[in-house]
Amino acid sequence: MKPLSLALLPLAALALLPAAAVTPAPAASAAQARQADLQFQQIATRFLAEAMRLSPVEATAMGEHKYDAMLPDMSAAGRAERRRTWQTFLAQLGRIDPVRLSRAGQVNMALLKNELRYRLWQDQTLQEWAWNAQIYNDVAAGSLYTLAARDFAPWEVRLKSAVARMEALPAFLKASRTQLMPGRVPLIFAQTVARQNAGIAEIAEGMLAPQAGALKGADRTRFDKALAGLKVAVADQQKWLDTVLVPAAKGEFRLGTRLYDQKMKFALMSDLTRPELKARALASKAAIRAEMYELSRKVLAAQGSDKALAMPDNPTPEQQQAVIEAALKLSYAKRPPRNQLEQRARETTAQATEFVRAKGFIRMPEGPVKIITMPKFQQGNSVAYNDPPGVFEKSGQNFYAVSPIPDDWTDAQAESFLTEYNDYMIHDLSIHEAMPGHYLQLDHANRTDDVLRAYLGSGPFVEGWAVYAEGVMKDAGYLNGDPLFGLTVLKMRLRSVTNTLLDIGIHTEGMTQGQAMELMQKGAFQAEREAAGKWVRANLSSVQLLSYFTGYTEHMALREEAKQRWGKDYSLRRYNDTVLSFGSPPVKYVRAMMFGLPVG
Image 1 (spheres, rainbow, N blue to C red):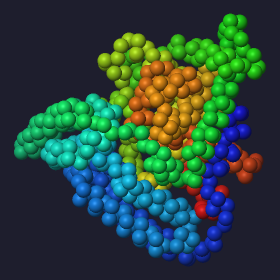
Image 2 (cartoon, rainbow, N blue to C red):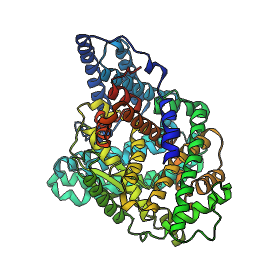
Image 3 (cartoon, rainbow, N blue to C red):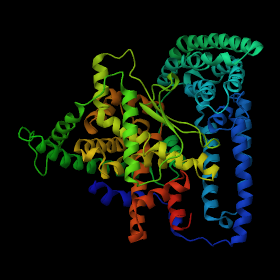
């Protein structure tokens, strides 16, 4: 880890901080700060209320249940209302002098301004409402899933809300067909939604219908009628997807440099340019591969497998490739059966949890976590994800969702996938998604008193923490310091770097599928099924894949700075708990609050 953490990371991550952050601003008096903070908080409270009202399905997920029976207005009129609302809030924020705010208030002001501008940009410039068919599918399926998944109220209450939404969904799905412009929809988006569409009815039939006995009389009759109508509507939507949208989908999935650079600035909240980020990713890729080579030499020597391969101190690219591949191959031998992936995730999460508790290097989470099968409407984008409880419902269930291996995969395809997701990799996956990764970090974030900051979480902070957590576990001796686990962690870190190169290459440089597969399979040692899935994911998203590398470099740089500033008072426990005490804002803002520095 030395080449990466000590040489590259602090310089790379500290450069993400804006120049203004080192220029002290005039300090506001305590009384001025309290008054300005109160003014800002009133705006923030109204923003949260309006954001939930205008996005009822998100509100349910966030734990605000006033709008559980409603769907959002996705029409041009609905977009116009949201646009006016965000512009009004920006105007109100413009009347507050940020210098008069407390440090925490300045951070929240910066987060809210960025969020409002980002929402306006997405509506007016990116215009996903016209070409991203997944938006409508996600809202439709999520409207029922968010009511069924968490026990926030008795079934009778949740089912009545579900009935109202089921009754509204036929019109919602029909309206989506008028909002989407088939010629602008990329084929990969149309094909993905065509595969996911059936998941809407599956939620209703598989999660809601078995509980319908909680409804009596007219309520039960209404449920049955709504379910029947929904099934017809989903079938109609499927017919439209298959016969109209997929054949007519001619849109470009690549974002292009102009839109990509704009989106990157919003998502990262950084002045770092795309060429600068790419250069850093290339340097990190070389450093990680060099570290993997040295560890691989040790692994092969310990196995007595070093005689057949040339392993010089200064290898050629071909020698480096062969040695790392030979060492990784040893880790591939231990893998679960194709139907045991989810169970192995449960086992590894339990093992990681006990290890973290025993080591005591961070406060344990308070809320529960449950490993679940990824809902069908979410399948096809990733192998796993973490779904935390909403910011208004802090004690709710956290879900670590694992996608099953598709039934239509051949044994050879399943074997390729499980070569990648072998036992060591599933350990790493559970660390990333659960303990002490997303589950733990998001539990800390939800325990903060600052609801706005918890709601406006930074993707690079969240994903960067999860990559950081993998390294913490390796350094703490998880799995008895097994070098094959250490090699797997480095492989995953290399994947985070490759994600950046892949995303930039695909969306701004015309990278072909063949070039992408070469980068992932040879450059990052990924199995064919994993690389093929990531190609699809990178087609369906943009900029999000940058979060892993940028966030990790920032977290590592901040930890090095804490060691220097705190000296003998530094401990890993103090650092980890302090970093997570501020919610999930960009790391540069955590740094300002952590060390009492100007926000900029």
